Length: 186
Length: 81
Ligand SMILES: [Zn+2]
Figure 1 (cartoon, rainbow over the protein chains, first blue to last red):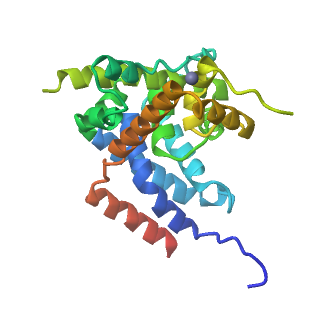
Figure 2: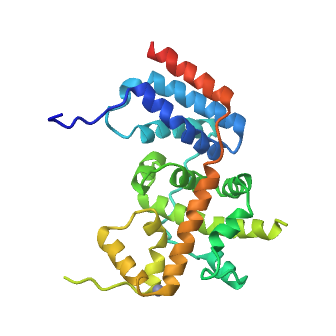
Figure 3: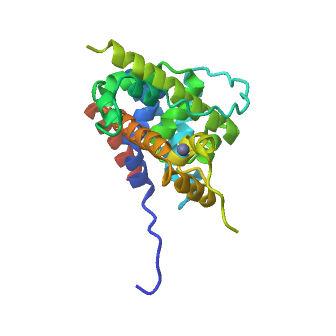
């Protein structure tokens, strides 16, 4: 072909392709499979109805997740919390420190894999679900969808600095929870 | 202009941004320059990278119920007609 034509998939194919990860985000938003199913179904119907507002060639995933996030806010009667200042929290590397203290040295074994192998998917999800709502939402979008901080900021209608601090702080809290779970797991 | 590599604190401070690919190319270069010469930071970065991958993998295990998938696909098919 002489010209390179960027392939634009049909709307319905784009939609079908984002549902799996969107379901996982909905699960973390709602923390409940029934509510997650309701939320995803509502978002799907809304997306089909609002088809004309999607600009072909733009980021479909972000467009769909915006619809779903707005619906979740309404479902959860979410009140916009005050914008927290960018605390710029530094990585505590808590798990790494604990592993070293426990004698799991990176030179000999793979401590991160060893630790996570002790926990199943439900435990990891539960640790995330324990986080405050704003951290949970930012982290779910960060870990499950391939979105930049800027895209997440637009989606959650907050400054990028807020997203950054929620993700970074969320990870610090998450590491402490995961370590506590590992200690409790026989 | 030659860039000065970061020290340990500056490198660790950028850990999450590095893993999330939020650093500028210059910052990535300076982080990697430090990691190439510092075993400590390289071990921490390696640990966090694997950890993050493992967490993502566990989170990706949740799957949509088949009954929901069928319902959504029916909506989509109906809209296509
Ligand atoms: Zn160092």
